[in-house]
Length: 325
Image (cartoon, rainbow, N blue to C red):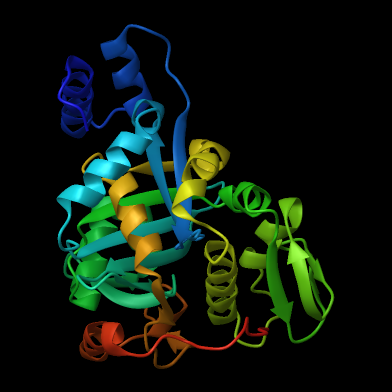
């Protein structure tokens, strides 16, 4: 970053956003004296979108930062002798603001990245009450969800990003299509999924049904979690740091994030680390009957915390792209 007046204005704008929880585009527009400009983001993994993405998953970076990306990139690389471990919660939401995907992206000091999926129906404790994980977001917002995820995993959430899952289509198009593989042909009226068996490249309108389908799959939502992981793995394998500006352009309107996240630096560290692990927290009974919320997925917090602790030392998956349900 430069030390000119523009940088200070940007910093002041983000500080104001954190204090008043308003749209960052409106703050920047007021500071710079012009109409709001489009914000830019990248879906990770998600989330993930979750889709990620998912990611994805996914992060938003104001255009004023993107315009100085080369200089920011050089300074980030020169100033960083060791990567700062960072935990980013990425939440993928549908048109009704329900969470389709919940992903914790953990960047370790050695550059390895763990993309950890948490099933949305996990039965967890939040503010002293047992509830489904996706209901925490609906009732308590992103801060409540971040606290619940931190308690469950033992990994405090440093930053968060909320991704509109329609970003999946834009991401797939931006990378020239995403290769996936299905064990068998499948179709589903709820998600709009209609796919043949075997390897295929999906993009555009086919991408979202692929990561959203759960009806008609042997393991329901758990299979949807695996779909997202495979989609993100395939998409991110095609991305380089040099391609970031184009991807930021592609999915920017679909994301909001906390103002404290250095998205450019974080994404550079993730991509340059080159070691990504995709995993789902261990679960128990997937048809656990709750007192008031119907069936949920049983999880053991102690088991989940140990799993999250051990994951960075677990060898990443090897071989080619796996076929999934």
